[in-house]
Length: 229
Image 1 (cartoon, rainbow, N blue to C red):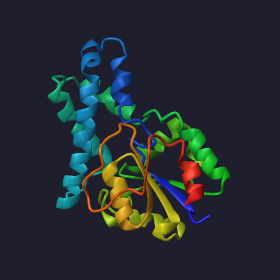
Image 2: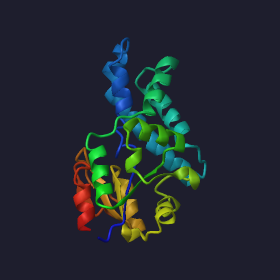
Image 3: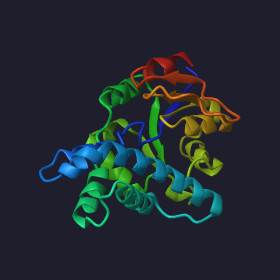
């Protein structure tokens, strides 16, 4: 076995980032959101990621909770729902307890049984990640939760990926890094990780200098992949 640790991005990889808008849309009195939530979720996520990249390249760091709120403000205005403070607060609260993808608990348990170290490596602030992990009930299947807040810059900055080796004493080639973000999986490959891109939407490959080593439709194949590498 050459892989020693399996490390996962959190948002969009283990946790469904559309869940907050979808759940809120099903609540009483949210008829307008029920019509707009897919577009809201898409814009919210796109702006959330875009703001992390801009903050990283300009050195204007803020934690992911602030960035998530700023992205939500843009998305609410874009779909004509800005000014509703109650809805905004509800969406932010739901973002703290996003649904895990269905295969996540069993997949992590299989990795632990096979002897792999497991961890999250995320842009998320520590408090956000702790809430998501607790809500999903997967804390006992993770050896650590690593946040970019310890280095003060978002992915794909190299210092973020270096957190894994510092924690586990691994070389990059000892690590299977898994992300649903094509750019993140590619950047991880550029850093030297063995990488898997979880391409749930069937998106095309990002045009970057690096490519993820493996592409999977979901996380269920990760234990077998880790065992083969």
